[in-house]
Image (cartoon, rainbow, N blue to C red; front, side, top):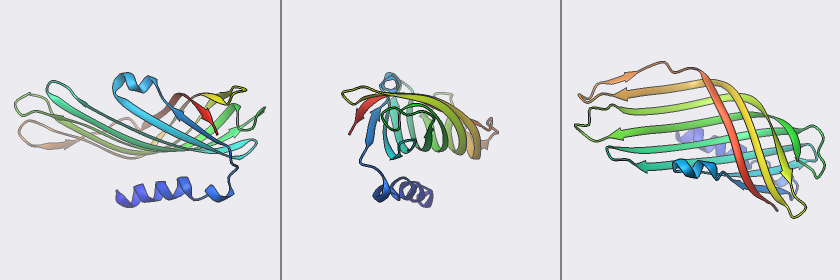
Length: 179
């Protein structure tokens, strides 16, 4: 797992020296409703291509369970008809890592749940940049999980794995600023 995280980090920042000075920093405000926090940085490589790194995390303490989540996504975006550079309608490919879990209190009758997934996919979206450099970015994509480790542990301590659908989704509804 440590090697995977290091590889993703290196891929996200390996080409920073060749990128334009344009960086779009975004935050997903909708995720905050569910105690999930997501930040993104989109680096303009050219007028019609950018590389985006997203990191998200969440945690919660419900009455009988603790929830935790973490995800890292790398997007390559191709803009079909940019006006201000790396804006308007785009198609993208993504690589996504997701881990999440629920840890229930003893005696609750519920099973602890954990999931680790890695997947690839494609999608489409649009980015609007105002004259004062405010950014609105929305996209939706779907792909396939290449690695899927989903399991639960029942109240007697037995760990069971099960098949989860191979489909992965990537969505974004974010606001931000262009530097």
